[in-house]
Amino acid sequence: MSTVFTKIIDGELPGRFVWQDETCVAFLSIAPLAYGHTLVVPRHEVDRWTDADPELMAHLMRVAHRIGKAEVEAFGSARAGLVIAGYEIDHLHIHVWPSESMADFDFGRVESDPDPERMDVAAEKLRVALRLMGDAEHVPAEED
Image (cartoon, rainbow, N blue to C red; front, side, top):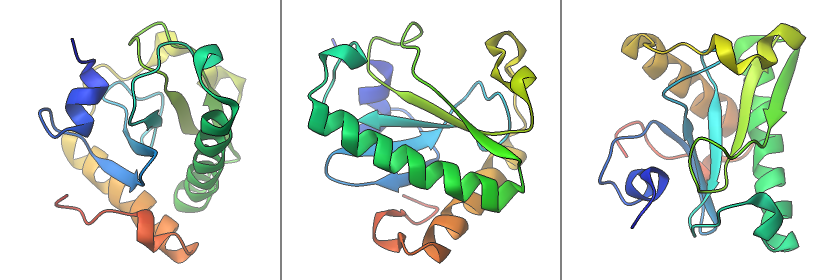
């Protein structure tokens, strides 16, 4: 059975994509710690990050790094948070979000009903920042 992430990747469920390449995608979390909270997800289902090939992990971290830099730029945050937890969905994913302090790492504080318009604005801010950083080839159009 496909994971919810595979269904998003395959277009069966909606997603606000900010990155797509042959190995992975990145889209906004539907339960964000902050607007701009992005999940970097391999296209191929891997349950635990420790089961992933080192090459895949290196690629995912490179993409997470680009996303984090774009978040700091787009949202003016002090830092970009990064966590690999893997308890919510059995499909490897890296959380990356704009962060101002350690309090921003509390997953008990996620926004359970984020404003769709603010989510759309956050996704476009990230796309613009990634394009300006030279990553346009991996940034989908808003309608993708």
